[in-house]
Length: 170
Image 1 (cartoon, helix red, strand yellow):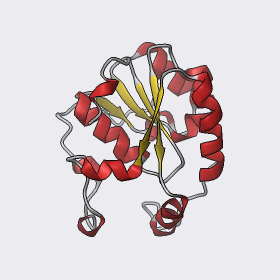
Image 2 (spheres, rainbow, N blue to C red):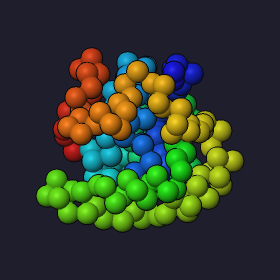
Image 3 (cartoon, one colour):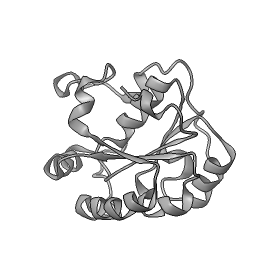
Image 4 (cartoon, rainbow, N blue to C red):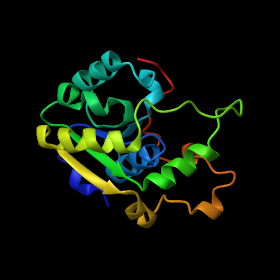
């Protein structure tokens, strides 16, 4: 489904929080047999750490929703940014359902879905390597788990052929 991204050095997955960036990151990594890097590996918002990853490593698919405003600065010419588009009401519902590991509501995102999309529209013109994926298109991906089957499922159960960064911090 995502073979068109093979020619790029690294793939950055951006979009509003709770829009599906985690799943999209792992789906692209699975299709390309690449390493998936979750945002916690650069502490979600440490752009200096993300910049170091992007300048020193290749063959990665990086979940980086908070990096959206920084894309023109962070991206290398051989990288691609992929923005996930999801209905804003679905994102709001995802926030209502979500909890931290200690069952507290997750903190609000630094920008709203509408603000994220406006940023993306401006960045899209500045970054030649960029693309958009509709969340609903992911239903066709072989790794997609329908909502009714997700009760005890977690994305880390997906076997990505062992190609995943260890839980290290950069």
